[in-house]
Image 1 (tube, rainbow, N blue to C red):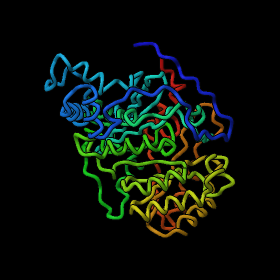
Image 2 (image 1 turned 90 degrees about the horizontal axis):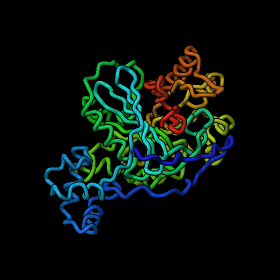
Image 3 (image 1 turned 180 degrees about the horizontal axis):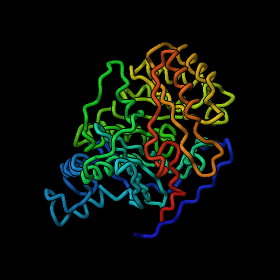
Image 4 (image 1 turned 135 degrees about the vertical axis):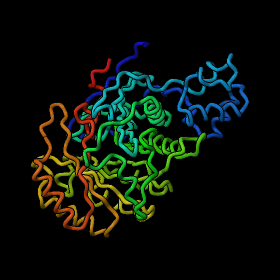
Length: 408
């Protein structure tokens, strides 16, 4: 493998937000960066007939391959050149770590400029969910999140985001049968079933990605154009895209209100997950620095507007931090603020805090967590504790920090 420079990211000071990503060299243009019309134009620019764009789209989005040897419908003499021009390598695998008897796979990827990102593939009995990154690093600087502590290296392109899903589909095609049972917690991807109709997505049997969650590295709504482009590639029918259900996609945000409002107007019925972590501004200012710009009530209002426009029930993510945000009165305050906007529009996912190196905070005591959950349920709010799948390989929520992953 060609040696690439290691990106240098200065760690932000506590509370510092990085809203504008550093400028770095753009990744190579890829078929997934473009809609089908754009791919046809690219093919013509390369002196190729337009139908080659559809052929390559079929190989990539339907068969999940970028291997020219498998593209026997393309002229043999020109395959390598075609693939190099329209399907350049975006993610170079550095290493993959497994857990949960092979049901969880954390992949570290090196991008074209040496930046490192991670994705986590989780196989469940009826679905396969991938947690993807949208930025190399993160500028939101939440002090209990390993990614935020590393700072923001750069935004990822639409194709770099999509390629994580395509790579996961390749892994699933080669995977052995699943043997690890679910531990009974809320699975990543459960948000997709939280709609007004109460219906569930069709089972994929864990053989292809059915659910995508933007809960990896980065704040996707701070990389808005690329993230929305990636969602469109995921939901476009094959071979224009991956042909996924928008309901199977979850967009997570720490409360970037302007981004949530833009997402509301897109007309794509993805699920919104608001990472709230505290119901009061005094504590949330410390835990989630974006709260110094958009307060708790503003973030909740934006989430409620999303529900009103889309009909998609919102998920509230709440990291349970011992003696910080797990008091019973905070559960009551959270319930009060959510119910003020109405009933039936929200679901809460408490998440036991996952350990990160050097952190002064740990997960809530089990009894305290249970009391918090029971108080929320007593107010009539559906509440399910999040599965901490992958925590032993630093692949769970808040643990992704590829810059310190030991990747070579």
